[in-house]
Image 1: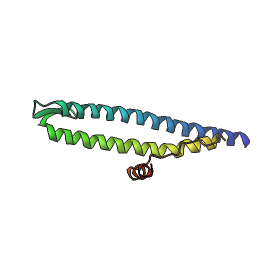
Image 2 (image 1 turned 90 degrees about the vertical axis):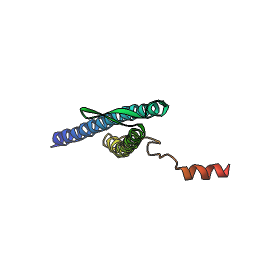
Image 3 (image 1 turned 135 degrees about the vertical axis):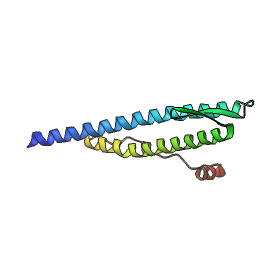
Image 4 (image 1 turned 30 degrees about the vertical axis):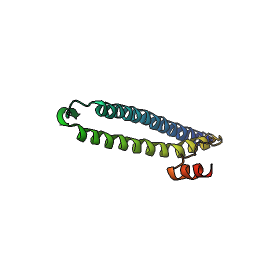
Length: 127
């Protein structure tokens, strides 16, 4: 019976570790897409000559006004930011659970969140 519990415990640790690795890989891939989108937005902003640009949708190219293309890219960029934040938020409890299963302490500072604009302004007002 003890061997079965040990095997179950190790399988649970392995499954959770694979899930964490998968989430980290997903974050890297999403960040690559976000950076490519940022580069595309920047190039469109720098291009002063053309009014229309070619955009690839699936397996076809469509010529769209530059401003419409820029809006689509900015929407994609914001969506990728949101998706990365969601994966990151889900990753923190998984890492803590894994550390609990491994009987280790929680990672120090891992649960920290960035300050909001209002909080930053309040701190700057005090200085």
